[in-house]
Amino acid sequence: MSSSPDYDIEKKASHSNDHVVTEDVVHGGEGGAHMHRSLKGRQVSMIAIAGTIGTGLFLGSGRALANGGPVGALLGYGFVGMLVGLMMYSLGEMMVWDPSAGGFIEFATRYVDPAMGFAMGWQFWFQAVMTAPVEIVAASIVISFWDHNDDHKAIYIAVMTLGIVLVNLAGVKYFGEFEFVFAFIKIITVIGLIIACLVIDLGGAPDKDRRGFRYWRDEPFNNHFFQVVPASKARFLGFWAVLTQAAFSYGGMEGLAMICLEAANPRVSMRTAVRAIFYRIVLLYVFAILLIGMCLSRSDPRLLQANAEGSGTAAQSPFVIIIQNAGIKALPHIINAVVLTSAFSSGNEFLYSSSRGLFMLAQEGKAPRILAKVAKNGVPIYSLAVCSLFSLLGFLACGKEGANDAFNWLANITTLGSMITWCGVALSHTRWYRAMKVQGMSREELPFRSWTQPYGAWAVLISFSIIIFFNGYTTFMTKPFDYQSFISSYINIPFFIILFIGWKISHKTKWVSLSEMDCSTHYVEDSVVYSKY
Picture 1 (cartoon, one colour):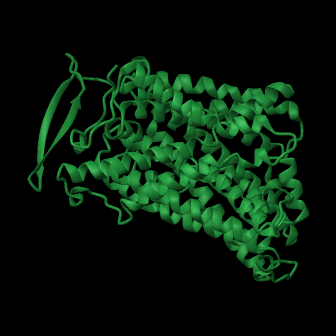
Picture 2 (cartoon, helix red, strand yellow):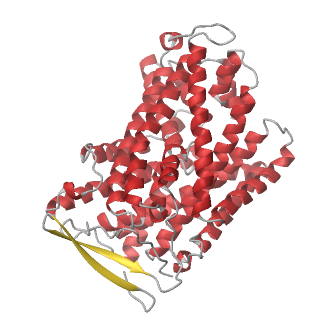
Picture 3 (cartoon, one colour):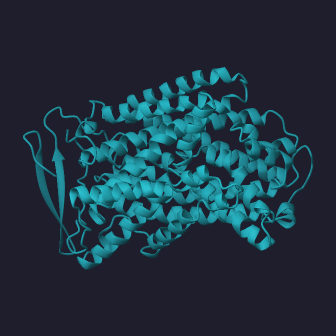
């Protein structure tokens, strides 16, 4: 960290078990722009629990059921959910230890290699900045449930894009309240749908049909996936297809690290938020998938038709199909409204995450420093402006076939983004864990410790590496060979490698040695982060 006339760098030594930890506290000049720690604990916890719940759960879960069957879908979501939980515990240990750091971008730089931080940062930024318009387009398609005029799609995209930009411009205080309200709506809706599915399963719906575990007995797995024989192989491949779908549904959880710099009392709020991740996975995702599989057959004609059409409206949601089959009216409109707010909220959060990711890259000198400029209300104004321009890519979905295909292709290449980031988080934690041992630091010093470490981080790194490698296996099963799907399934990997090697060669970076690694915390209570611009 370099000094300048506008900054006074204070070194403060704290002692724990005879180990000296050096903390860097940066104070800006009088009136200097800085990040505002305005996100309250309740807002951080709610964002952690439901912030990124969107079309992945409400719509994509139906495709998971069709591919894997009720048991395959449950196992897939449960397995990936366990890995994501372990990843968040790994990230949580590092975040709570040093909430003044630039999230996993700085952790990768300090604990692995500066080139790793560069590659992870830009990979995450690209994933987040592209997912924002994808969610906005999804929201505009959801509106077509009521308005069937395709000519109006551009209007809806324009209004919602302007909406998320204005929410982010207002500052983190208002962003937090907005996400708190919409996260609350999503949680209440999911809980209500789970209760409704339970009532339907037990025969309390108008059709009086007690389903029980009927569909688990009839076809627990998909025996006909891609018409593969024998059935045992089809069942396994169907289950494997669920893993990528589940990863898409859980995608964005790592964005919690982006709010470290703007959370009030971050050590307390982050510790609570990371622990809340477990309840989100178990209660909201896994339990929802369990009941969907109990109430709906994977061979249901409406489900297969919805997945084939990919409408993006509530008509594609397994919850709506279950309710329609049970003879309940009006609820589809309510669910569609919630799907709409969920997609809009997710777009808002991804725009926030992408702008903060770009700000952190600029702070570290891995992006133009002007992008680190902060307005008086704590908003990284130029980073937000750049990310907002990328949101305009959503208008490609309104164009002719070629433009729409280009947008869909850009959306698909972000699929692996979260899993690559999760692997980077796990790698950073394993090296940090080893360095602490080498340097004689005790884990008792950590304000948040997980009993799953270090095995949890290794499980995340190995498992998601395997899932990434086999992600596009279905492209080899289609005739003729679907080269476009193959490219979109794997292009993230060479993109990440090029970023890593390019920065490493141009800046001659070295793998950080365990003995020289900076494992200290730079956080001081009530400190804020000033822009280096």
